[in-house]
Length: 225
Image (tube, rainbow, N blue to C red; front, side, top):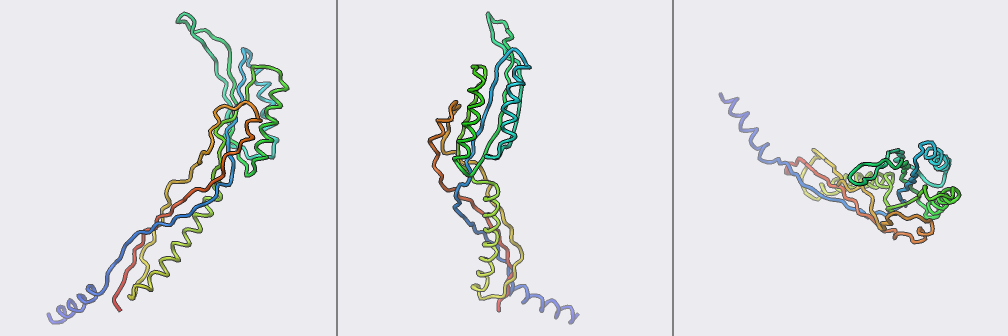
């Protein structure tokens, strides 16, 4: 009986003189938008599918061979078009649409790319072909965003290691949980709804900065010295 009581009494001070501390801290950073981004759309209307495919192929060959800009989210659709006459549906032809998102860190590259795209359209000498661009904007690239998030992770760990000695207690790190805000997104600075001439690109949207945040959840276990 005495041995059991002694064991219990020894355990109590251990519980009294140790504790767990949990707290949060946010780390923020402002980074420069580094890529210019826009959407291009080539639209061709005709009653002949072969005509549409032939014209689309000219644009597709140019886009595929171009090295000035990065192309992504390519999509081609071909849909029948109808109008209503006296409440009756009437077939008027087909519409082919070729869409891409393009990016580059240099404004001159995107301007040259769109100029060449418009030259192809002008050389076709037809109103059945339309080339438009929209949502010209500066964005933070995924690569730059991830690089800065990694740097902030290191910063948050260093901060805790420097903070613990200030507590004047014997503490050990029990948990570090890092959560970034879902704030990687394109920031628009000029919407240019359906521009049909490369000359319109002479106005460059302002290149500003974007704020990113990393939330750190800390848990440390301490004992009084």
